[in-house]
Length: 229
Image (cartoon, rainbow, N blue to C red; front, top):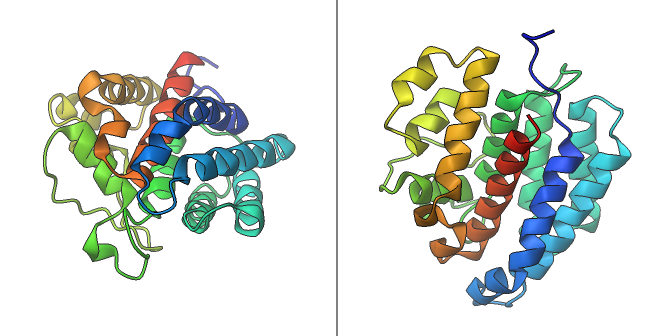
């Protein structure tokens, strides 16, 4: 039993993201030079995701994520909601067969969710600005990455080590060496959380409403994940 990864409550993780987005909704709105309501929309969308996941709490994670994706497609607010729905659906595909989720699965979820969102414009032109995941990685890493992350629907094959390699160059050797074990997943989560929580990686400093909201979601989910272990 000591070797098992702790079970993740998806609705609780997104509930933490909802709290953070609600607290910073006006700051995200201020970054939105088009309609000035991206923060408002994302609060509504994450609230819908949270409620959907809670409704399917006793179902397999992939089923819960797919249900949340469908609800967001039907009821989401703002153009970005369709990309979050796509990311949730991609995560559901990758997590098929799981009866419970651990820390590494949360990394997969974050990668799928933020990687599906173009940082600006439409998904049909990803090369124009990359994905929100690209921007969050750049912000956290404090460097101009040349990301191999693909915001398109196809899985680029990135794993936990690849993501951490962009986020946390120093100390990556240790994390990559043991990334298959529960202890390493916990260590990786702590390191990533620490990086996101540091002052120099405030998602609101991205200047982009999509990256700000996405970064806050990732930050909140990781903090909640580590706090629950």
